[in-house]
Structure formats: C-alpha cells, structure tokens
Image (cartoon, rainbow, N blue to C red):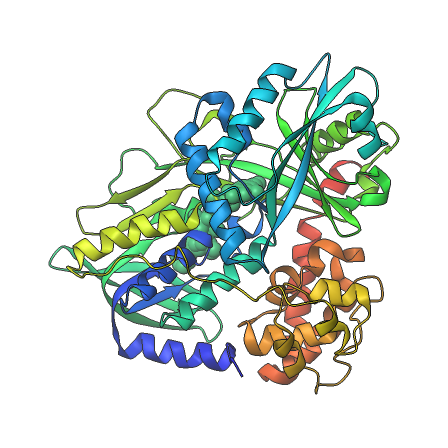
Length: 537
Ligand SMILES: Cc1cc2nc3c(=O)[nH]c(=O)nc-3n(C[C@H](O)[C@H](O)[C@H](O)COP(=O)(O)OP(=O)(O)OC[C@H]3O[C@@H](n4cnc5c(N)ncnc54)[C@H](O)[C@@H]3O)c2cc1C
C-alpha cells in the first residue's frame, strides 16, 4: 500500500525536527509542490510544508485550465504563450489521468467580441506555437455550424465561430499528485504546518521556525536554503522591501447546472460589459463559469465571491445563452482566488494587462522567492528554481521532470465497473485513481455506496483521502480531495457529519474534535454563500 496518511505526516514531522535539509520549500500550492518535486528529483534533501492543506491557496481556486493563454497573443506575448503551450503539451503527455483535452468554441459576433480576421490569425498562431502537436488542429465554423454545435447560443449577430483545443484538470488533485510525486522522489512533506519565521546564521537563511497546526507544537527545521513559494503571501517573508512584490487580483467562479445553460462545449465568451473573456466549461452535469479579474486590496486570508462578481458572470452567460435565465438561486457553489501577479514598475496597468510571467528573487540573506506564472507553467518555474538551487548548493544534476510521469494512469473504464461501480461512478473514478488504489479501499463498510445519492462519490474515496492522500481535516476531504464543496447540493453540508465521523474513526478524533470539524466546514460554506445575502436572497 502506498501510504500517505496522518501517520506518514507524523513520521515526516519527526524527520523535519531531526534532519537537516538542502532545501525547505514554504508553500504547497502548485509552485511550491513543483519546486519540491524538481529538487527531490535532483537528489536534494528536500522538505515541503504548507500552513493549510496542499492547494488550499490560489492553486485550488483556478479556472482548472491547462492552457497556453490564447488571449495573451493579443498583447504579442508570443514567448509567454509558447512556453505555456509547451508545458500544456508536456502535461497532456505525462499526466494523462489528470489533464485532458478540451475543445473550445469562440463565437464571433458582429457587434462585440473578437473580430473574425484577428481570431483566425490568433488561432493559426496558437496552433503553430505547439511544436508537439499534441492536440487536434483548430477549425473555423460558419454561423450555422456553430449553432448546430451549440443550439442555445445567442443567435443575433452571430457571424462565425473558431474551434480550438486546450486542456482541463482538477487543480487541487493536480497539486496533490505533484506533492505525492515529490514524496515518492524523497521529499519530506507535511500539510498544516505554518512557517512562522526564518532562522538565520551569520546573516544567511539557515532554516525556519514552524508550527504544526494539528498538534499545536512548534519546532525548527534546519535547511541550507529556503524557497518562498507562498503566492500572494510572498511579501510576508521578504523583509526590508520598499514596495510589495505582488499585486493580487481577484477572480471568482461559479458552478451552475449545465442543463440550465445548455452548453455542450467549453466556450470562451466575451463579456459585453468590458470585453473580457469569460469561460464556460463543462464539468459533468455542471458548468464552471469564470472568471472575474479585479484589483484586490483586502486581507488575502479572507477572499470570497461577492454579489457584484457573481452578477457579472451571470450577466455574461445570460447574454450568450439568452434562454438560460440564470439567477443567484441557480448557483451550486462559488469560489474566489487571488492571482499572485508581479507588480512591475509603478505605472498603473489594468488588471488583465499585469504580467503573467514568473520571477525568482534572491534576497541578500539567500532566501529565494518564486512567484507569478500559472498553474500550467509550474514545472518550468520549478525547473528554473531547481537550476538556481543547484548553483547555490554547488550540486550537479539537471532537472528530470520534463519526461517524468505524473498521477494515475488513465485505466480502462471496465476496470472500475468490474469493481462493482455503476458507469457514472466508474467514469468519475477513472483518472482520479488507479484501479488497484480503489480496490485497496473496498474492504471498508459501504465502500461502494455513494456518500450522497446525487453525486458519484463513493465512500471508498473518503478512505483513500485519509489513508493515501494525507487528508487531515474535513475540509481537506470535502473541498480538495472529493470536491463535494463545489459539486454537491448544499455544498456537501448534509454529508459533513457522516464524513467527519468516518474520518474521526480512523484519525482518533473525540466527539469535540468531530463537532468542531463539522462547524468549521459549515462556517466555510456560509462564508462562500455571502453573495446570496448581498443579493437579498
Ligand atoms: C481565479 C483564477 C483562475 C486561474 N485560472 C488558471 C487556469 O485556469 N490555468 C492556469 O494555468 N492558471 C490559472 N490561474 C493562475 C494560477 O492559479 C496561479 O498562478 C497559481 O495557482 C499560483 O500558485 P502558487 O503556488 O504560487 O500560490 P498558492 O497556490 O496560493 O500557494 C501558496 C501556498 O503557500 C501557503 N503559505 C502561505 N504562507 C505560508 C506560511 N507562512 N507557511 C507555510 N505555507 C504558507 C498557502 O497556504 C498556499 O497554499 C488562475 C488564478 C486565479 C486566481
């Protein structure tokens, strides 16, 4: 059994106390996970901690796209798009269970959105930038062909549509797979461990003081180098800086029933209000709609969707699909994330124009900070950091992640139906887990039964989350391992107590802890429903 559990975590914390590392990575979002994986694969003694769960920051709140960023071609960012397209193609090849091709339709209207010629040229270029040709080529559709593919799309002024390919993923599970692969490569990892401050020796960073949020214990981790991959929290460790490194922008998403919109494909719509791109992505029987992009000056620890954000997305979808009549009551769930974008110079730029490039900063005490980029480009960012670490540590060895498989294989569907699951559940499990992993969890009570009748998540998934995915809290399971927070009616609250009971049985929670977990989950859901109250609903 590939154990990756509370026990693994406890053993890892013990090693963090006792051993000395080459690299301590702070932050278990996609960037920190990627850096830990790159470093461990180079043979460096590596430790990784996150103060919350893996992917509990921005990396679990994305549009779930692995993409080159077609829209950056408008700003002539050919190098940026080429790098992202290359990383997309590598992920499609190396992580077939986690990253899947996704056809996109971009409608062209007479009175708004991209012009026909510009879009045709952009799509041609986008195809050319993919040297690997992993995905099918673009095609161009007449208005009639576009309507055949998307019968409920707005008709008035529809001139044509472009069809092109990118890819989708489950962001939190992608991060988890990277963390697990880092661990397989030798990294010592733990979630729910906060770095409270850096430790210095002779003016150089020599480790960090950390606090285990589960046990409430503090200790020191010794390390020859520290990588700060804390996303929008980056500046908290970088002292003596006249201006912040990061200019966060907020982006929200909503999940709504797909039948209400009636979209068959993924679409890149243009918001009439400001010309921005809004994605509508199929997510089983739901549609994921996002995103907004607004300057954020609040507390990054408290970022939730508000009524104005939600209204903008609803308005854009209702314009593009006039029969959908979506309102706030149709929303299954909503979430918000902060982009850790680099502040460049002092000039004010609009949110969508701020650089999506990444950067590595080296402070006089040796602290390396890495930020910017995208979910898609994490590996390339990590490779750059790994190269710099090799120089500083005077170690040889190049990055090996370019051709390294990631995540479970895409096993045939019947390997899951043969385990006794109905087809919908089997489809859900395929890609998320290897069949043998599911088989290992079938001995537990009601393993094959659904947690909630309307979503295809069997109880076996909760056991896998606890035993093989280091889920430590109820939110770890419901938000990031299973996603019931996003997909289930009432955001999974009706199942919260049962799931907490099951977790408590394995993790040794007393009734007080079990109740506290349920309350804390309910609070989280309530905080993400604020937009309904703002609406007067
Ligand atoms: C709305 C939105 C949509 C997006 N959509 C896409 C997309 O579809 N495709 C794409 O490629 N990119 C997308 N991005 C960009 C991408 O999500 C980010 O660039 C990326 O997730 C940033 O990862 P990160 O690891 O730097 O930050 P984070 O994921 O925020 O990770 C930082 C981690 O550091 C931890 N941390 C903070 N302080 C401490 C501490 N003191 N001790 C220990 N840990 C600490 C946090 O808990 C957090 O988990 C999107 C971004 C947003 C906001």
